Image (cartoon, rainbow, N blue to C red; front, side):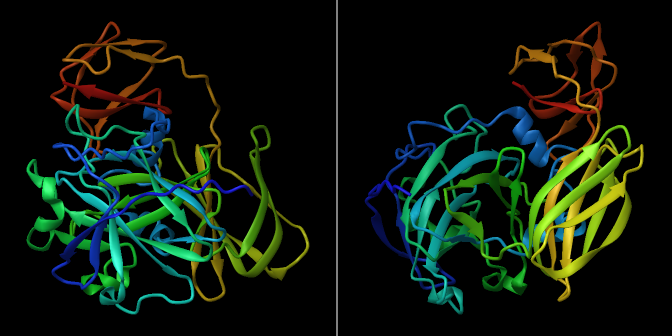
Length: 397
C-alpha cells in the first residue's frame, strides 16, 4: 500500500491530569466555540438516516436504552489495533448529551499495554468541544486526521466529561479541576466501569465509537458518537469466524450464512426483532468448533421479524456481534420533510400511513399532524419515524 505521510505538529501543553500523570497534548488551536482549526477540508457524509441507524428508536444504540442489557458485546473491545501503519481519522457524528464533552486519544505498542493510567505517556486532545448545539459548533461529518499511526499500535480513547465552557481557550489549564476522565479501557476507570462502545456499521463499513458521559448514567453510550476510519484499523480482538455471506430469501423466509473458517466457535445466537426493534425470539445454532472448511448454516425466520441480529459465542464464554440485517420489504423512501430545520410547521411530502415522533433519548413525543403538516413540537432535535421503517431527523428551531 502506498502510504501518504501527513505530519501534524503537536502543541505540547505542560499540564497533568489530576488523577493520572500523563501529559496532555493538542493537535492545534481552536476557535471560541471549540471548533478545531485543523479539521480536514473534505468532510465525511453523515445523513439523518445514518444517525437514526445508530441512535434512533430502532438503531444499534437507541438513546435512553441500556447497551449492557441489549448488546453486551459492544463494550467488550473498544480500543483500535492498527495492523499496518497508516493515517487514522476520526469523524464527529452526533451527540445527545447535556454536557459539553471533549475527546482525546493515546497510543501504545501492542506488546506493551500500560498497566495503569499512570503508565500512559501522554494523551492528545482531538475535539475540545464535541457539541453541535449551536450553529458554530461541530457539524456531523467534521473530520480530523490523527496523523500517522505506526504498525502494531493500539489506540485508546479518553472522554473528558463536561470539560468545555465558552472561555476554554486555554483548555489544558482548566482540565485538572473541571473534568472527570473516562477511558475506553475500563480498567482505568473507577470501579472498572465501561464508558465506551465500539462496533461496525456494516451498511457503511465504518467503526462506530460511542460514549456514556455520566458515571452512573442511562448506559446508552450515545451521548457522543464518532466514526473511526483508516485502511488498517481493527478492534484489539479478531472475530473467531470468517463470515463469507449472509442471505435472506423473502419467499421461504430462510436466513442462511456461510463461514470460511472457525476457531473455538461454540454456537451462534440469532435474535429476531420486530418493526420496533424489540427482540421476540432468540435461537441457538451450534457452531463447528474449529474448522478450516466452508460451513453452512440456515434458519427459518418468523413472519413477524423485520430485523435479525447474529452473534457468535466462544467456548470460553465470550460473545461477539457479527451482523444486523434488515429483512423487511424494502420500499424506496420518497418521504421529504421541509423546511428542515423549521420553526414549527413542517410539510411531509410522500405517502404517510403511520407517523411517530421520538426525541434523541428514544422517548415518544406528542404532536399534531393534519393534511401533511406536522406541528406542535418544541425546540429541539427529533427522529420522525414514518410507516414504521423510514427515519428522518428533524430540527425545530
